[in-house]
Length: 315
Ligand code: SF4
Image 1 (spheres, protein in one colour):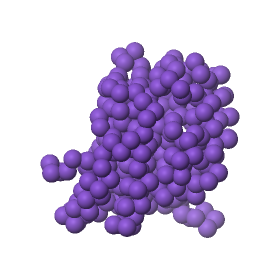
Image 2 (cartoon, rainbow, N blue to C red; image 1 turned 45 degrees about the vertical axis):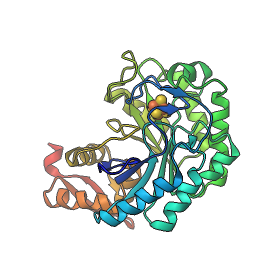
Image 3 (cartoon, rainbow, N blue to C red; image 1 turned 90 degrees about the vertical axis):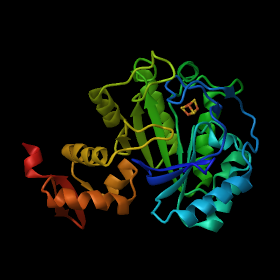
């Protein structure tokens, strides 16, 4: 990957399978300066959209990569070390990639600019949009995301609600919890109300698992995360250990995660895929050996096949 300036990976991502990252803005240009940010504090906090990186350069690199690398890629992810929607020509990047390949495009964004109609339109061509929402009350928003002046949480939420109305692809909303900041009951109630309005396809719950920008930003434990998951309902899945920005995940972690989820309840392959954010074809590669080894087993119920934990794993 040495000869690529704007691509990284492909990395195995829990949510997106084997994902080729496309970095659309220079390092740490963002609308937020989140206390948990794993890539350090924001160098330039801005709401100004620009063609930070020439579209032509990005498309040339994608074209070259797909010619040179014949290994399979599950998604092309517009993300990186800043906020990708700050790139004023992101729509042209998406449209350009669509003329090169049919590999699905995911946009990992903090969602802060979706209040602008132009930004919402720019993302319509993406297959999956993964916005974040860590707070609903202004006080918590200012504390955890430390937004650029001019941004309010009301605006951000309205943007997400409006985006849902016009966007036909999948929306996977991510909430990252910091101990003592956004995990109290009143905030959780407000988050639940906001989710009801936004209507994402699923909700990914995360906590601080990598060294954060601010040392005081601490993680929730597994029990606390599970309580929040139960409170937010069926669409919510815990994905801690996943970094919001460029990251990798080992194969062993995926297997362990499958076992951990199935220990709680039997799920169909489609549910498991949606919850873990791993494409069906990639997930099958893990399910088969686990079934053969007896670590999990399948069971037909109604018209679906469910997977549950095997006898050995129950002991
Ligand atoms: S976590 Fe993402 S949204 Fe937050 S400051 Fe870092 S780059 Fe920006």
